[in-house]
Structure formats: structure tokens, C-alpha cells
View 1 (tube, protein in one colour):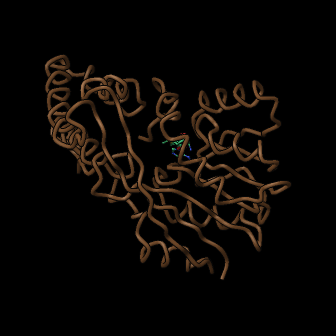
View 2 (cartoon, rainbow, N blue to C red):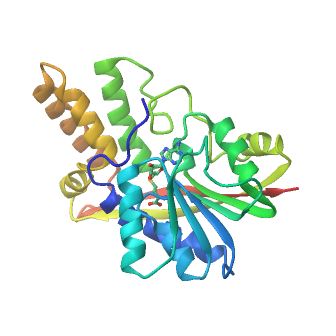
Length: 270
Ligand SMILES: C[S@@+](CC[C@H](N)C(=O)[O-])C[C@H]1O[C@@H](n2cnc3c(N)ncnc32)[C@H](O)[C@@H]1O
């Protein structure tokens, strides 16, 4: 089953990821008057930044609560942004109308990457751009998530590879230039991949875990464990394994810091 990102509180993570939307929006200037779709807009980070720069923005997300939060944030800033419920397999936008389609750590969670790529290319204007971000495997954050994924797989069965976040079949490598070139190439698009790095910080490993405890994935996992008779013991074991993993990857002995590489993928018609 797909995760509802409206569970718990995505908002703190949205704040942590805001600098990446700032990077992507800045590199996509000029935006004035451009028709832009923010696919998987969450609380509206990229959508609002682009609207502030004059883009005509439609934000799309399957999580109804987050769409509401995004609407409220736009209203607070006096920005006109259309926010719609939808997902990567069914983008509620007409063919060939998006001059820029952004998807910041969002389409990577689509269960069917081929369907998502077909749909993104459908809505993109003839001279438009698709620009998405994806984590690069091997980073500290993924190492922590893998510990959680493996634990859930031990308890409930499954691959435990963490997938694209949905725990389903082997995920599409959204960071991988060859895989992207092949998948987008089928739709007549060329692809460019740029790697960047970002840091996550907290006062301590314990604080980082505490901050993450309301993340939709953590809440969904906690709900699943609570459905088991030994749920409390399982939750305690998961927390202990996560704390070990978080301490192992910590780069700052006086507090908490991890670095993560991510890919900025730009696709356009060849
Ligand atoms: C890590 S959050 C990123 C949100 C936002 N782009 C940001 O930068 O803060 C992932 C987002 O992807 C959305 N999402 C999950 N599955 C999706 C799908 N199949 N199609 C489009 N968006 C999806 C979630 O609802 C969530 O808002």
C-alpha cells in the first residue's frame, strides 16, 4: 500500500528540504509568466518559491492534508497557486502545457516509474523542461532508512530494500544517468544529471531521531508495529537499532551532522 504523506507531520521535514527547492527554483530562472507544475508538492515548497518569482503554478500531490497545508501557506503569503489532488500516474494537467515540471524528492516515490515518466512527458510543453531531485544511494540518510526497512521486513516479511520509500518491488534508479536516459529516451527526451550535496544537522543523534519520529514513514511504521501483540518490544528494538545506525553515520561528535548526495535531473525533448 502506498504511504499517505499526510500522516503524522511532514512539515518539519519540509523545512529541512526547503533549501533544495531554493536551489532548483533558482537554477530554473527566469520564471516570470512560466506555466509550472510542482509534482508531489507536499506543503508547497517549490510551488510557493516559483509563484513568488512570477510563475503560474499548479501544485499536485496525492496527500490531501498536505495539499491543504500548501493552500494555507499560499494564502498566508497572498500568492495565487492552484493546488490539486493527483499523483504521478495521473497528473491533472492538460497535454503539453507545463513549461517547467518540478518534482522535488517526490516522483521518486511513485510505484510505477515508467507510468510516471510517460505522464510527466505528456504534460510537458514542446520546449519545456522536467527537473526532479533524487537521493543518491550510499548516503547516511539512506543507511538509516535501510535499517528501518530491513527491520520491518524481518517483522512483516518482504524485501526490506526500502524501495523508493514504498517498500515495493525493486525501485527505479532515479539518480542513475543510464537508467534515466533509457527511460526518458523512450519518450524522445534527453537527460542531464548533476550531483550536489546537503547536510542534515541536529543537537544530537537522539534529537535527530526525536525530530524524525513524526515523519509519515515513522508514523506508518509505528502504526504497523502497534498492530502486533509484541508491538511495544518491537518498537523499542527498532528505536535501539536506529539509534545505533544514527550514531554510526554521525559526522559531528559534539552534535549531529550527516551529509547526503542528491541528484538534480533535467530532462527535455531532444
Ligand atoms: C519527501 S516529500 C517532498 C515534498 C515536497 N516536494 C518538498 O520538497 O518538501 C514527498 C512527496 O511526494 C508525494 N508523493 C508520494 N507518492 C507520490 C506519487 N505517486 N506521485 C506524486 N507525488 C507523490 C508525497 O505525498 C509527498 O508530498
